[in-house]
Image 1 (cartoon, rainbow, N blue to C red):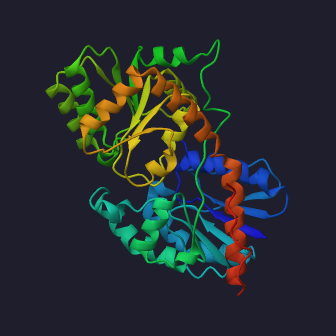
Image 2 (image 1 turned 45 degrees about the vertical axis):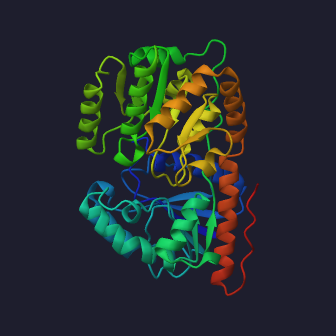
Length: 395
């Protein structure tokens, strides 16, 4: 098959969740393909250098505008993708952002990674929210196959976007198992911690600082821990500032609890190897978010041998399985109790560490690539009027 891959929405170099996904997926796709299919990667000036696949079966198709000028990027995406799909005689077009073009003349596969504009109105700026309300639903309903990255997200696609259940499949994300590994002898992770002024012992949070990520609930839980007994662990928060007002709120909360000397805001870290170093140095990783479509950081921490506390909401229990302590994100006392258990109870700590390592091994980019190829074949079969090749996810 001749397959187009639309990644025009992504601006590379920001160490975003989408960038992590594309890096892992595209490289694994080249290996899984084994020369069978031809791929055409739709790129622009913001990502063409970053996403060069060293494989003769992958070719780039340049587009004129990037998301740095989003209205022009969207306009040219809508106008030029149908043209290129026909020019290249594509069999499949996979939209790897949350929206796609229409009337492209071939089978389409639409990834849906986030529905925050419907689940948590007001979290995005008004322009982005209006755009997504206008585009996400129609793009999903027009696609032959929609890919969700968790069963939780699939349920949301069915309920919120009204897509037929037989056209929505689940393909999970994965962990880079060459990068996210437990610390070993002679490990240099201490150098990264020293660079950022982080000292042992510490509790870790890694995420962009959106309000729904619940860093404020973690700070409240941390304050409870320090009020109960002598608690030597610092709280290290690694993440950028998409919402300045929320970051200010977090700092005021830290000040209100008089924790300025105990809570450290590291800021955005773009180097994935350094993020791995933060994981392996932490006593516990805490991610009690209110809303996640997948929650890749849970698996990254597990792969590094660090036990996890996470939320009972959305996809997180599904991703964590029985390898983490699950809490209600609305109850800081539960978060505090779970952190304390992993620090104070050696048996629980070792059990969660061992189960976490095993759980993370189940999620590989090779699996993601092969299941995505199966979704392409299903979409192609449906467009040709048959039943498709069937979707057989690797378990």
